[in-house]
Length: 187
Image 1 (cartoon, rainbow, N blue to C red):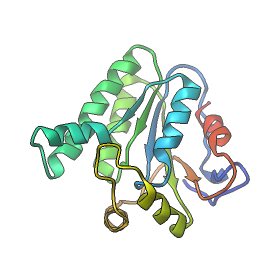
Image 2: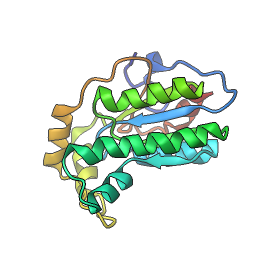
Image 3: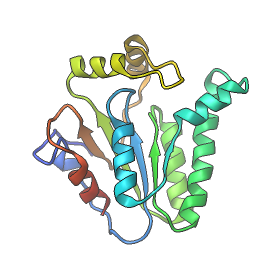
């Protein structure tokens, strides 16, 4: 389910399916580099007092140990899923910060939520203004890593499989703060 950006801070109202608000929840962010998902993941983690588990640093660490190609990508997703499972087992909500470009990566979160007996809330983030999205990608600091170029982002966009199923769609090009709509979706 997805919907057009609406008055709830860039949140597509047709995509909102509130949760019960009781117990831990697994929150999985998805979207291309530079759309603002990491910023939102950190804000959601702070609001929920939940650990935020980003896939990118795990993928980089695996690369430092010689895992290259597609192997570190899925291995990083698997490692983060393992860490998330521990946190969920402790009764904590968990926020996953990842591109989640393909169904196999996204399936990890569905399987994990089912095993842990917690609801899964997927938040797909995009930037509806392509010029702004490009500006964000090109302005990203290196932070000890090689940031994605706009050309690499376009390649990832072409490879990005459509996300199917219940989710909240957030457009970060909309000026209003999306956090209240996201938190409403999670509770």
